[in-house]
Length: 214
Length: 276
Image 1 (cartoon, one colour):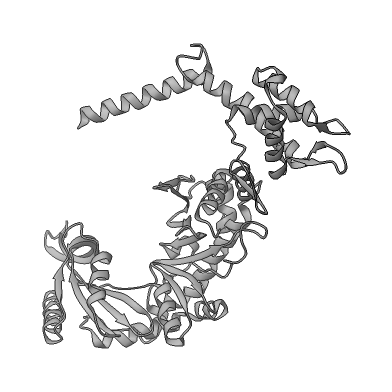
Image 2: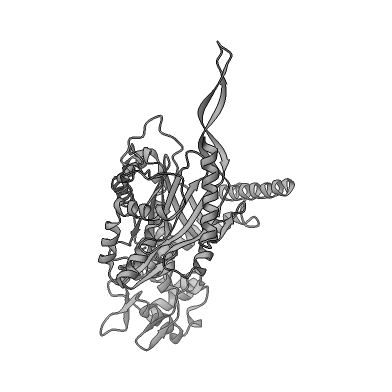
């Protein structure tokens, strides 16, 4: 029952890559995906789109069937169990106009888990560029900004609704085996970072750099 | 924090004085969660140094707070919640505000708990200022280098005058200064002593008494002289003497400790070679 869905899903990814001329690469063992994605993003000319699709091999939690035997009747029956197997997840590395770079990862085996990974700092950089506010970027942060209050406002306004909208915007564009729930209440969170910045207390060091944000 | 070195020194002192931050009592304050017998352990405060930049880590179940000196500019506190169920919150996207609140509150509480007992940046500045040449208007005076025997003799000589209400003159200082250098007072000229007095004056260690040819030691000068002489004669010199094999008695505890350290490092290297 599951195998035809899996086969169709993998074929649809390959078709998608071919139709849209998107590179489909296989990650090597030990290769840092982020570093590779960074290189690929530099070559990507568009403001929005799928940069490349990456195929990896990872251990995932899946539900699979196993054969069990009834001790009384001695007859066998199938049973669904939760276990870990090596599967091929597919990473869609994309760039969004509002959120900047992010990726969507689909597991190619039942229950076809999907993971959306985005960086709040990249979202801020995109928003600052759209609003024309000057800033100095770090790799994962913002060093200084011409309008710190506007920046704080942008941070505060990054909500679950916007993340939900991002997912709903991109899922129809990409091949995927799952159906999106009607509301964001069923989309699970996995990891959350809350970076904060600290400045020295008054009297220590120069106050000229206090507007710097990281 | 606008200078990377000052920022690193500040952060190193923050770490040094808050190494107990990963203990259960502190962790439960930071995360506002009660630590019970079944709460996953260990509770510790790992300090990981990447090059010369240290970072402080605090763990609570699958959640980690990392604090480090970001890009030589500021102290960054970063909380990562890897499992929302650590805080009895479901994984629904609508729980993002609650999760965000927990993360930011943990950051705030950590910063409230962390304390530093002294202004290490100003202390570092003051130390460096004395150890470097100083320029007042267009005049320049040489540095008062900590390990220079003449400077140490100057500090000691100055301390002899601390209780004199009328201060001291060039001649008074010369007598004591020469004795401390092991020379007869006549061997030092008035001009040489004027040179040293000028250095001390430009560094703010002594100040002239108006309408006299006498000087008095300033508050900064007194504290600096006291600190530099005590540190040099009671910590550095005896410490180094007890440490070096050719200088120290074999029963010195400091030497024994360093010998033990040396042995351990050597045996570890030998072990690594055998393993390779």
